[in-house]
Image (cartoon, rainbow, N blue to C red; front, side, top):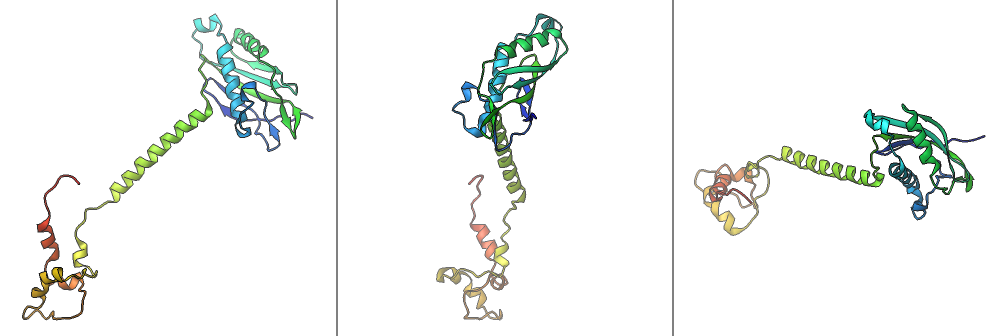
Length: 232
């Protein structure tokens, strides 16, 4: 019994389908992909095949004259010997079918797919875009998409920070936080606290802002010391 392995891959010039590859399966390998890591062999196979089609496919004159825009659907097989064999072609023009068969006929013999280390055949379905579009490596597309995502995420993060940022209103100066203790700083408001009738006499230090703010406006004093600026 033959097992068909389907793998979904997209290229600007063509769309290729095959069954999802299992752990024990290795896709066909072009000479250009011999030194490619195993996990990238599927991508290399598709890109190499798409590039070969793009460079060798000659769009028939009638197709150009009638300004046809569509595709050529090709079901093909890579045999256990590494040869390409067309199984079925579906397209609007017989001229496009003939050209597709010609291109697949001149494809080189490649290393066949394997299952459990044994050579096997595999079938694929590919759509050749008309007019032809130069294929782009999937890794390049993914890198560009990742760059766009990172830029977008960074932009959103900055926007979120800006939206959540509020101007400082000096709330600490009336809070329950301790006032940092230094003799020079406390000397500024000791007189206010120890004034007759304030009922604020205390030897316990450090003071808290909420207690001192009743007799000495630290916030107002700090504001008066600020300089007008338009940048950091």
